[in-house]
Image (cartoon, rainbow over all chains, first blue to last red; front, side):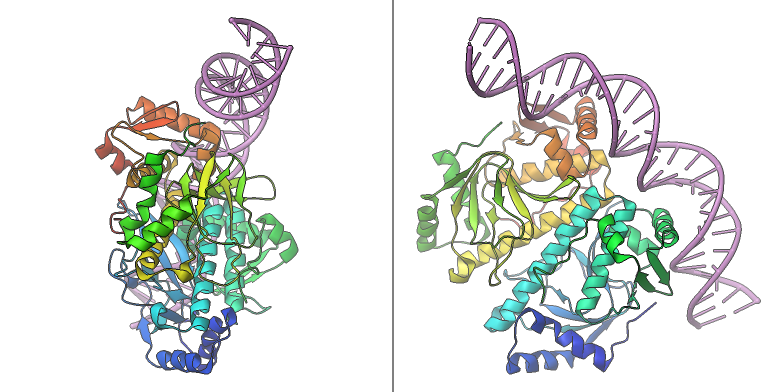
Length: 239
Length: 239
DNA sequence: CGACAAGTTGATGTTACTCAAAAGTGGTGG
DNA sequence: CCACCACTTTTGAGTAACATCAACTTGTCG
């Protein structure tokens, strides 16, 4: 599987994601850096949070990919949203929170604890709030994708979202971005079968929109691509 | 169209929804009651919040139905989530929040302002937090519905959700609950066409699961119905 | 080398969409 | 009270998109 190993360079960028949302002071940056010193590693395919269990406290994804996931009684699975490096998990403001969904590691994931939202200063609270709003935006987008886009549009829209999110933490370049998902995971995210995902990817390749090899994706003809899925960037929220 | 007219009885129940999430003190209840004294009415099909516009402050739906909505460039429309009596709209914790989605009135809607989350005491803050968690749960459920359920399962799951949410504010009885949505609105919520919604409803009627007349729905054979959509109640969050 | 997961392909089936038109419903004004 | 209008619901016939089933191939790692 691709990625999974945290590097010093990599961590520095992750630490800076929250400060993109609000200017953090020196003390907050120190606290975050200290938290990063006690990371936890979860193997690929392991559960990070179990649905229905109490949420102990927030974490930050330092490296690797995870997904919120709902599994049906008959085995059907739906990925509700992706959790990428820099994302927060388990920020709850109520008492005794219960996990509404499970979270599973798609690759090996490295996490570290994050300060509890009740005990943070204004700048970090603002960063948490913006991060939460952005996560909500991705949920809205996932709903619109599944409800009204066809297979090709869904795929394009998801790939554009992933690219933007990775770019925001310095993990995407002009040469492409890592796509740490099997076709089956893509299917579970897009509400399709893996067979149809395979055919959709081939269509995109054939039409010159996508270059996907060895877990690295490169999107081409971006202007035409964006039209294919009515893509709107999330600039109103981010940095 | 059904419903839309607020009644004194009705309002009393709505005011009590937040206190289901956390025990509010007398001062908070007084503040909420005062806010209800200055309601705002929005006609059916009108926009309550415009996507991309600044969010001024939170409101409570006193009566009527509204929906978060995304509209695509080519006219396709997807309802992202429903807003029913007692629900909060526009609770944002970040500075200068921007509406991530539009909100439109499905019926005539009566709203009143709600206290800003930054200026509330602990009990009301807890109620806001629980309300927000519940809203997030409904988004997750909408994603799972659209991604992995077929038309009949989607319809059943949505109807069960609506029934539970209305019951929580005293608007559902054993005789049924108001369904203030046209088949086209149901289609926009379920990611289907209105023609297919029509056929799906007929199938449910024929199979003895549903009685839907004059805007009032009654679900029958609840035990078998719940199995049709792998329904799980939201009890872990609510009251 | 062998085993297992991931990706690919073809044939066929089913669900839901599209297009088009008819029938029902409720509100409005003459 | 009726005629009219807009909107909603219903029905039918044909089609497209996606699922299903069942191989087969490729890649990876011990």
